[in-house]
Length: 89
Image (cartoon, rainbow, N blue to C red; front, side, top):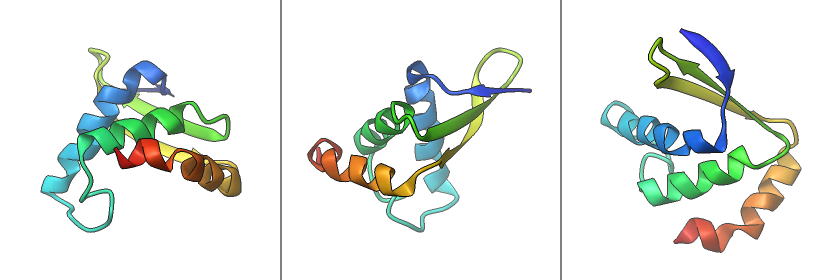
């Protein structure tokens, strides 16, 4: 297992991982939303200068998990508000 920063090209794998977790954990708003929302959300996150996303990759280069954090919550919320229409579709 190796760890690396996520890239925009990782968005589909991240969405699939996040979406599959609803089989085990169905509480919360993210568990109720679809793949298109998650894809739009993670595209915003990966392009946010204040976001840090670390992926765990297996020996074949497949992402097995990830963790994200944001260094400026106020800017993150403003960014989400600016993109609420995109997230809504």
